[in-house]
View 1 (tube, rainbow over the protein chains, first blue to last red):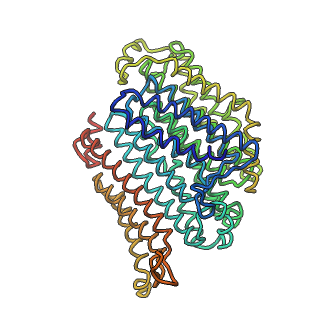
View 2 (cartoon, helix red, strand yellow):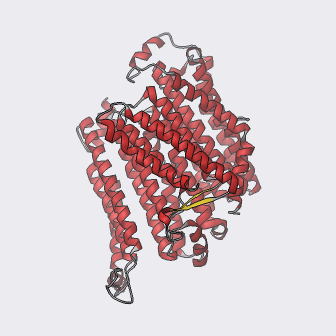
View 3 (cartoon, chains in turn blue, green):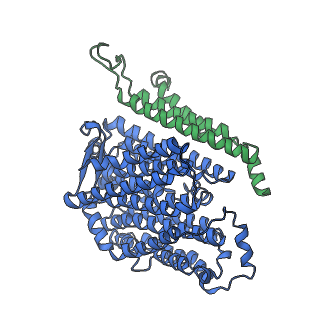
Amino acid sequence: MTDALVLLVVVPIAASLFPVVLGGRFERIGWFVAAAMGLVHLGLSATVAARVLDVGRISYAVGGFEPPFGIELVADGISAPLLVLVSLSTLGVLAYARRAGPHSNAFYSELALLTAGISGVFATADVFNLYVFLEITGLATYALVASGRSPSAALASLKYLFVGTIGASLYLLGVGYLYIMTGTLNMADLTEAVAAVGYTSPAILTSFGLIVTGLLVKVAVFPLHTWQPGAYAESPDTVSAYISALVSTAAGYALVRIIYAVYTTEFLDAVPLASDALVALASVSIVVGAVLAVMQSDLKRMLAYSSVSQFGLVVAAIGLANETALVGAVVHLVGHAVMKGGLFLTVGVFATGLGVRTVEDFAGLAAKAPVSSAAFAVLAFSMVGIPPAVGFVGKWNIVVGAVEAGAWSVAAVVVVSTLLTLAYFGRVIERMYFTAPEPEADAVSTDGGNDAVEVSFGMRAVVVASAVAAVVLGVLGSDLIAVIQPALEVYF
Amino acid sequence: MIDLLTTHYNYVASILLFGIGLYVVMGSRNLVKKIIGMNIFQVGIFLFFVTTGYVDGGAPPVVGHGEEAFVSPLPHVLILTAIVVGVSLTAVALALVIRIYDGYGSLDEDVIKEVQVDD
């Protein structure tokens, strides 16, 4: 049964070979291979999740080498929901890509590779293995960002590659320090080994600084976010949705795991500077990201800066070292993936169908595309944090956690960020519903730039499904928390 | 100080390599040179790891080579993996550089910016 855990990584890696190998013979085989991979992945992650609900925590020793010597894969209440999220996002994005493209077989190979990398990050319990999966994720993402035809997409991708590689290398260096001091790479083993070395040992402090900085680059927190708006804005809509939903989420998850499983809350107690620095950096990120989002005229850039702000919330909650806040952080990781992925796809539907890409163009859109506009509005209000949607559940827990921890400044920043989120989404929704369209609006669709494709049923269905999912997840929020909480309780 | 240089010159060298690599990535305006800088930076990390596995007077960890002290093979194995990752990254980066050159006709960041503004 626990084999399902390793197959979550193996199946996508194997699937990534087929589109390239068979591509010469069958021109459009990529999508079918990827769709089959997505369905198998969903079956596997559902198996893992069912098992986790049953017994709480499952582990798998890769190659039969017992941990701590071999690589261990683990699924628990935190990673199981995220693994299911990977499967569902993959299927959603594939349903969208069927019509919208990109259609090349290489694209589907890269997509499968990215699925493998992200599943690996969520499943692994070994710090070096985590580095390898982070780099697989990174490599696949660089290639996917560059699958947009323009040279500016390649430039955005290269910029991402430089920053991402430096980040991952810093992480690797931190792992080196940990290994020198403790002689182990297994996370469960490191918990005790790090405590035995002493939390205030200079080498342990250095490793913490290097690892956290490396992961924060991948999470894209201000001021380490510089790669992110370009990468999200220049890549094809399908890719923006997939990477905004999962790539930073994977890094955020890794941050939770490393800080709480390897360094533990005792480390944060012993070194108050560590949590203070995280919270301070995150608070700045929340505000600056939101302010930059308000200033954007390009919709995709606005959504990208919004992610900088939302991941600030997650990092702040991680830094608070409070159980309620951490539950909020994990819920927000899941919720943000659903909402932001859905928003990028909705913007993609508008761009393909009507050729609108900027906030200006959105005037009177609700009359032309009522269903997609409604989905956009639902997702946007969910991101603002209006109950009962999932955005509210995450933010509420983070605020309550901040108050419990006595961090009033964080609580205030979160409330301010909600207002700012309302500011940047409000102006878009106001244009969509209450501004009359400009008279020459018909001409706009001709310069859309996209290879003219019709908006398919699949594309609309995914957009509506993500809006529904955002609300349903919010309503079922307490059930989600009931799954996550037992896995987080052990850290406190 | 001299003592540090003579006994720990590997660590000094790896720190120098980090510094040189980072400086080239940030300071150079040429994209290919930035890739070279990234490689130097990674080599610094490789050297750091390999050095930590070394034991004074240690034998290769192979059956039939020496009796008591062996060098630790694990950091070396980790770095083999990291080298593979580094090679893949360089390959992807160079492929991107080719596309950027096709699009802009230059690899100089300043020139590319000018071309972008003109478009």
